[in-house]
Image (cartoon, rainbow over all chains, first blue to last red; front, side, top):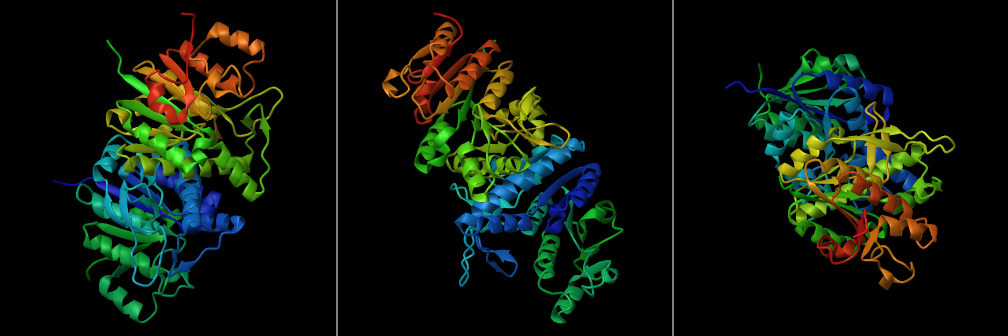
Length: 265
Length: 265
């Protein structure tokens, strides 16, 4: 049986901070035909609010250490401000949507991260995605808009990286759909020279990735995203594309960004 | 045809500020059998955040003037912090729930309030409630948890009083359900002497209300709530009960609080 295509699109980075760019993206996203899910970040907005509130933020390898106050900020910014503003705009663009976090409908069950040396605080590693729930919403024509928060089932909200949530949802939905996972960010794709947008690699396969990483051509910021991408492919996601969020139609059509591939062609 | 009972419960005031009391309430709410919807406020938390951020708040007759910055605060606190914390706890209490605001699924469509002399800012007066959507969620065993935000369908979120949202939802759902609307707050009900919790009136009918209001026994804080209550009864809500949120089982059973009645018995 041919599976229906599902686009799982993740946005983050500075696009959420720029109203014009965000509206361009949301207009394209709303126009995307077929089943789709939007996962958003909001780290910059969270950092700004933390600064205004005088709550110091600690990052380790690009991951936010989430103390109790930072979790409150994340819940306000991701679950409230960013999520609801996106939903209100998508409704206006003719895209019926439903803004949720991982606690809603038990969408994303997680456990508090255990790490031998680093205390990440209230950070969650995903245990399960509520597939029937997403399936039902999509079947009803509602586009889920997912904030990067999970919960532990015992009443505790947890902060979970938005790239990881997109990856986990894409993997889980692959049982029922042909999933394309699109990581939208500020660069045009994986770059051979991070200072040159024209050095975009149209494709990147696993062996290339390993080599470029060992040669330090691909560095810190991209590594978790690419690890997520390859993990998703390994778990049944059909395609992973990384590129500029404002080029969404081209990314979906395979005409822009970097197509991540498991094996050499 | 006998209609199924639906309890629409509104909480606000200081219960959201007190973890122990909130947990008591949520435990009772989770245990409430049958169809139910929870509507929450969060004004105190919004005021606290506004103070920390140095955003002055202006109230007129108990209604918040909502400038752009205050709307952002409301979206963070109501749509994010309060809503998601309640949902995470309800899930842990065995009550599958879904936290939404009025933009989600086009649940609450509103227009920006027009007033001849006061500019309320980004405040919405409700035009429509998405009855089929609530109906579907309830049918799927999901309890909607509604934050006091609406949207105008053109991309703008709006701040709407939680009592009013509870009333509008209760009215709208009365076409399909026998709706009981429960306003939980910090007092034991409508009091003949506001300093004496034992002066609770077990019932209050319209003529009594008019008289007590003209005698200034019932004053400022209670008037909008009671106006909401009588309006709801007029539009088909079966019962309206006002009382202490922590007494929820007794309120639902008609053994506590004040039962609001349209006519003399």
